[in-house]
Length: 443
Image (cartoon, rainbow, N blue to C red; front, side, top):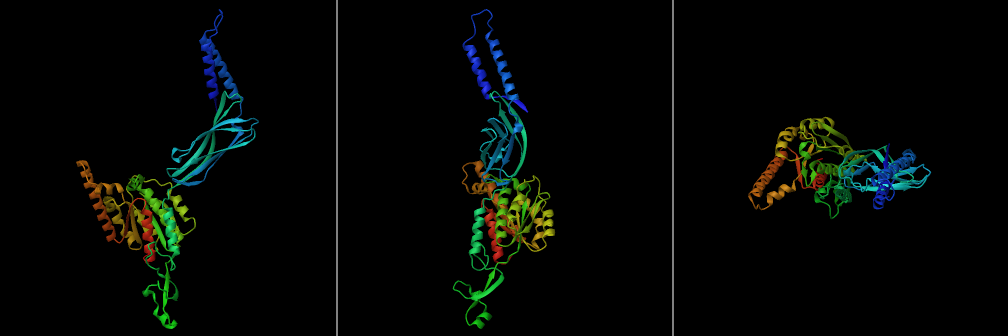
């Protein structure tokens, strides 16, 4: 615990010193010099401040509490509330400082509050996190002014709470749109593009003007004496597994956001849509080793489970072990599933790591390889150069796009579906690929 001077003491000392300098005590032989008078007054004020702080209210007479949501998403607003309960017999003037990390975007981390005797005070601030992760808030620092306001007691108080900031989910609204569209369709659960009609027989019913001719059941038509069609619904309880690369290439930034953040948004959207449509969705995140596994399930809280597994991941600045990760996937998921590999289409990385390992999973599973495009490269490739530097940059960008197209062709030749999406569209296009596969019976 520390005994500290207050602002009031400083102002009082300045005022007294100014008064002594302006109106010096002179005229008698035994008068003190001005400097001696100032020193004497300062010493008296310091003693008063120490006494004021020393006999003031002990910090132990304050009961402190910090309240906040246990989980927030990046970019979403929340509130932190501090509750101060006083057992003192006098009104207290208290300053409280909290150790909120700058990335939490707190409106205030320090505040002054006046607490009536035996009463409770509450102070709140808004936070908007800009970085995901686990934030352990361990201590509060409180300062209580003495009765005269000249000295204060300051103490750091243990007060441990944990705030988990999960990855941003900007595609949440798009996910809801696709779920609603799928549920509106009369015949089963179809893709957002309205293609196909499911693969699992549901019922026979009378032919309608909107029915496809090829759906007519001729045997039932002959018996009923009128056109009868078969209706189908998309199969449920299928498995979808997101395989997220957390290695070096995912640390690169696209549209001012690391690639891994775009991939996490896609993983969350695919989880939300597939589980709401009756399928099971899981996650495998890896770099040099497997970092997180969420078994496929369609629980109502599966999205929270996937988000919980993602929020502490940071890209490992090393090459990812695709062979080891795919072997783990094959060992865990023997039943046919849709595997969505979220990575980058860098030609060298794909040639060295992904292509040699891809046959491990394409033999059994439906594989989608998805990545986010860099719009800056596209701009460089299509901008008219005005000098030599821009011309060289354009050539490099065109070469990078050609390498990307060649990589895409090689992946498709091995049986994978490739999604190469613009920033903000990765989750949408990956989910549409899932819905299309589901509606056409490939899943």
